[in-house]
Length: 92
Image (cartoon, rainbow, N blue to C red; front, side):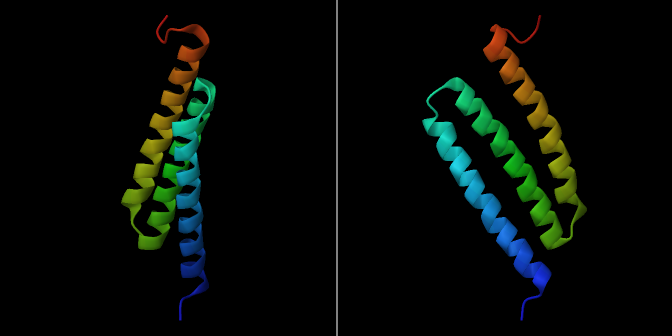
């Protein structure tokens, strides 16, 4: 019989994958560029959470390091996209 931790990690995995699917749908069908940037921002957060859940499931440090890289790159890309949408340029 599965332990409570295995069931919780499995449930979290399914929830994160469902959230990623919904974010992808919003990214493809977003009516404006702002909606698409918000969906992309949420999608990288879900990717980071997916990496963390897989790290818990498999007990490997590599997944946690990948989550850190996803978080850093996702934050920088979101700031760059937002600045581009607001001003039309990234580098001043």
